[in-house]
Amino acid sequence: MLRKSPPGHKTVLIRGVANAVGYGAEAVTVAGLFQSARVVTDSMADRLLLDAMLGKLATYLRMCGYDAAYALDRGVEADDRLLAIAAEEGRVLLTRDRQLAMRAADSLLLASHDVNEQLRELQDAGYELTLATPPVRCGTCNGHLDAVTADEPTPASVPSPDAESVWQCRDCSQYFWQGSHWDDVAQTLDEL
Ligand SMILES: [Zn+2]
Image (cartoon, rainbow, N blue to C red; front, side):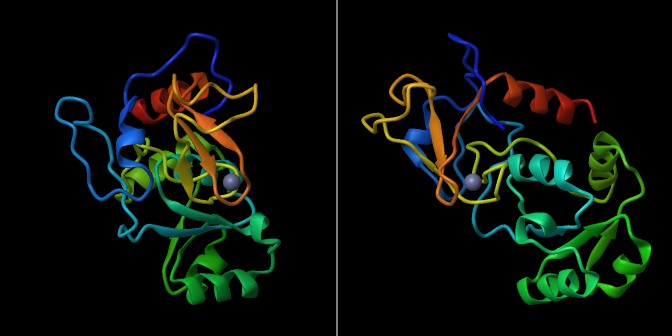
């Protein structure tokens, strides 16, 4: 997700701020740095459920800070079970299946097979698609990310948190930092 940073590469966009605010910070404004950034808080009710065909889209939405549950992460493919989860958890169901969309209390029907087109459809539907700064959701599992403190030991494959902002997923323990993939996603979103 945010991994695979080449040596020496760093993105200054949110550098230094994660340590100051950590996860779950209320709206933080850093003048001049984040004018176009989307500041994500727990109170934002952006709860989505993506059907089995939309795994790539789930990763993008998590990087944008959305609470994007994905059917296959839950081991669910059956329509009835998906509808039950959406209702129980108050999630908007995203799907390309018109019948399924019609059965959900709250749904967004997507037309395209292409993830970039799907992102455009979401943007047209009013979803704000910019990278969450700091990142709050694990792109792999949708778990919450915590900022790794500067003195915390990390594996050799992970940049040192005293030199670069690093986050770890509470649920799957994966580490994230803002590497080349982050920049690629930012560019994709910019070009929508
Ligand atoms: Zn995770």
